[in-house]
Length: 67
Ligand code: SF4
Image 1 (tube, rainbow, N blue to C red):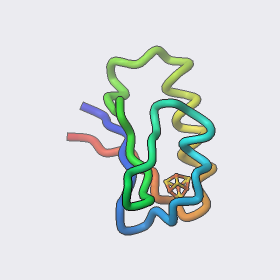
Image 2 (cartoon, rainbow, N blue to C red):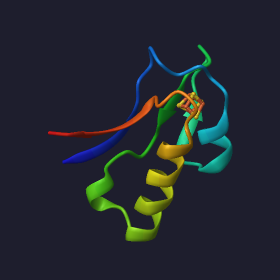
Image 3 (spheres, helix red, strand yellow):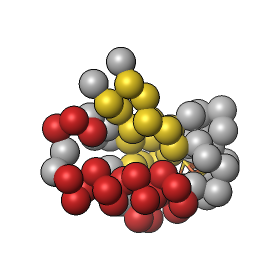
Image 4 (cartoon, rainbow, N blue to C red):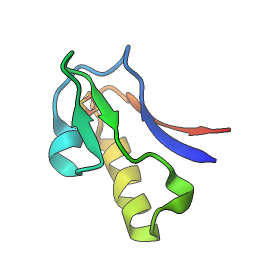
């Protein structure tokens, strides 16, 4: 399964991903997280949107994990 995840240690809480998609939300600690992260079950357009946001993260904290 391919998942989109936010690396907690890298996220600087800039809010870009949360403002760009409702898939991302901000934790009380000021770190983003992905609420719906299973890329395999997403529509192609949604997947592409998330991958674009991934590229836009200023610190590269959004990653795709496969397991
Ligand atoms: S865009 Fe990157 S640094 Fe900014 S909140 Fe999202 S994961 Fe964190």
